[in-house]
Length: 165
Image (cartoon, rainbow, N blue to C red):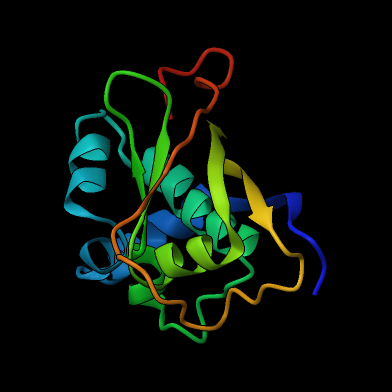
């Protein structure tokens, strides 16, 4: 086992906004299964909530990629609901729960940065996490620890000309 050292973990994801819009129209329960009540409320406060939902969907996938987790092993609902994008008067932040929070603890994640953007048909999210620990940690195992941990985050604002992601 190697000595603890700082590592950067990165995940990025793109979402095609029309594809998400079609999924929301086809499956009435999709929105509630994938987005938390706070995320839905934030997005629904905008004239067109779908680009904002798409940016959050991309953030969930990007965070899971940074943690080395996928949605298939966890189940789509549990995996995506375990990553919440919160925006309360500042840049977007991540709030992790369940297996995502345990994976972050196991990897030694001490801080994260979230960047969201959307323009036209595309939404993008990038997540960078600072982890302090041995490189041989495996996020897929269930580590011991308190659930509901919060990943500190900072992000950039909206894309040029956008009102906010």
